[in-house]
Length: 279
Image (cartoon, rainbow, N blue to C red; front, side, top):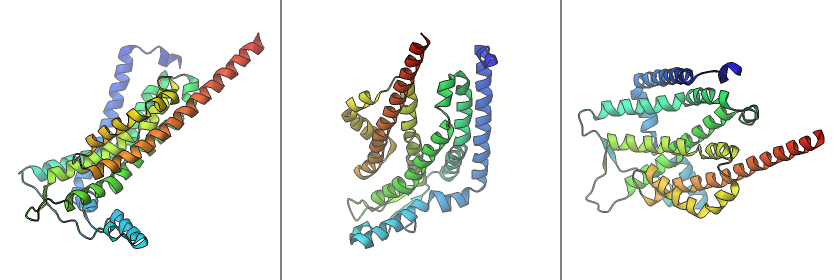
């Protein structure tokens, strides 16, 4: 601990540089592996939400049978994917490889970042921050799963079936398709980190449950704006699908902040009693 305190500013920069290098190498390795198997990845992962046999659409058909609301069952996705640019397929291969490399390497990236920040924390802060990397990775994976299994197929379904005229045929460019899926999936992964952000801000006293409750109505507007940013299509259906879980995360974050503040008060009371007893 003493060695960590004696590190100079340049030493910290050097440590950060090497952690960034290691994290970049890890992401590059996953990116290269993804690029090697890019054809399989596109057929079985990237284009999977655009197939009617995708698990989400099967669940919707099962729900339609139970409820009798047959409109829920997706029977077709009337669109084609085209590449109108000479470098379109190659650039989207790189984009998909980068996104997959980032997703696969994220737990290691979070661990490197946490390892850099951890020495600067107090012993009590370290104690209550155990499992931070696991929690961050879990929330990221949960967001990725939500973006891939819920938001992406719902967006594809809505946009491919929406029509203003029978004359118009939906032929989406590969660049538009991949960019939409990537932004939806990664956007959800990032936004699902909100509870962890609130946890750490509550630990240092910047955020309180009272503050969050006070601006609850304002948060709805912010969530809608974030939802519009994440969903490039901007359609109301996708906006609703992403905004609802974000608001649920906001309510969960209020509870997390309440627990953190309550524990801090208990610690302060215990410390005060101990000081009084020593006197």
